[in-house]
Length: 609
Image (cartoon, rainbow, N blue to C red; front, side, top):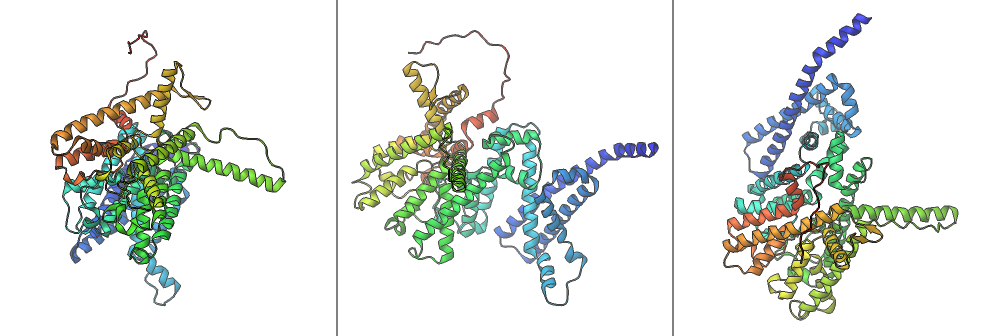
């Protein structure tokens, strides 16, 4: 018996390295097959293909199917114990569905019509095969991207590169013949893709007349991916469908999505996606209820219009399918609820997912409290004083103040100017809508070039501040702005600590907020300086407005974007990328981090004032 055990142990040591090599090769082939499947589907639906090309694509899909079957079968056969631990229940379900595709291969089509024949036809159907393979491809690529985090790669660099990859993919998709009416240059395609992924809304072409339905579908997918964040989506798919990931991976993803602990990491990702789908769904129904039967569309067009604008608003993207954006005559009269719904979607998308999660906790607390009262008829008089965390309080207060000041200011300066001739209700609605858009949606209902200088200055400050952290909005963020203001107040009052709502702000929060503000001004100055040289015909205010709108991912413009040259468009696209990824995040990915030292230098005083 001992000899038998020794033989098994020796055999395992001898075979295991070869097993690992074989599985590693299959993993690489699976990644390659996933990419080829996606490329094949894009080619098939983006170009007009011949019968011979369709046959070649079908052979490609069949090869991908063989690779996936081989990979899963080898893992189950050679490393069943590890596979059973790493695969989630959903992964086993997908595996079972994949093995069901063997049924038409093993068994002939039943001759008798009925349920069995219908099931056989479904399992042999092209839609079933491609949908299953596409889902497995996305899951494998997501898992591979998250696994990169386990190699101690710089998370900030991975975040930036992931956005860049999606932008380049979007550029290629928007250049497909079926995406546009009459073609588009690569510069404009790159610009639109960057604007969509970075949820900005700046457009160098007339979107309504340039893109087809396929193009609009690509744009809204890019907006959704960019709004949620590439790593949020890939981390969710990797952890929810593909099973366990390394501890280091989970720690990095936890920091990216601001989860409280590893235990709540997956639930945080689920909440982010759940809140997004729920709010966008509710917004779609609200928009549809207002436009139904008023814009000359059939029911399908109305639902598509509502879904597009709900996603674009919640993601703070500012794209519209209508000529003239939301200033289209079809909307400007009798559609005040539409503008209010869009504004609310912008606000909900811009306050940040941590605040939405905190709202969920508050609502559940009150529901439990009320349910306990119904069960016992004894009201719990105890109060929980920290339902609203510090981040939620600061973001809500600053957001409310900015909206009130912005609405009042825009109404004051445009009451008898851009809003002249409108009913009073329309004027206040447009003032509220135009105060919401700079934070940071970029929709427009009036010609911004016709606004007064004072209103444009209000726009500039609102765009520069932006929305909340961990949101779909851009800007330096209301969190950083509030911390800088509180620090200024503390300096003026002569206190050493920055305190608010019975809490002392951490030194790291103050340091990062100050760095964000300084870097924002520095980057803006450099780009405004360069573009003012490249575009001498544009005024300094126009160039400044364009650059602030780009780095804050707003999308508002004084009609200057289509007039920019190719070099200026690329610079503005770079500004949008920097603004979406985040200045601090981008610098952390580029600059080599210095290790913390255990010693300190003697402190020195710099003369200020």
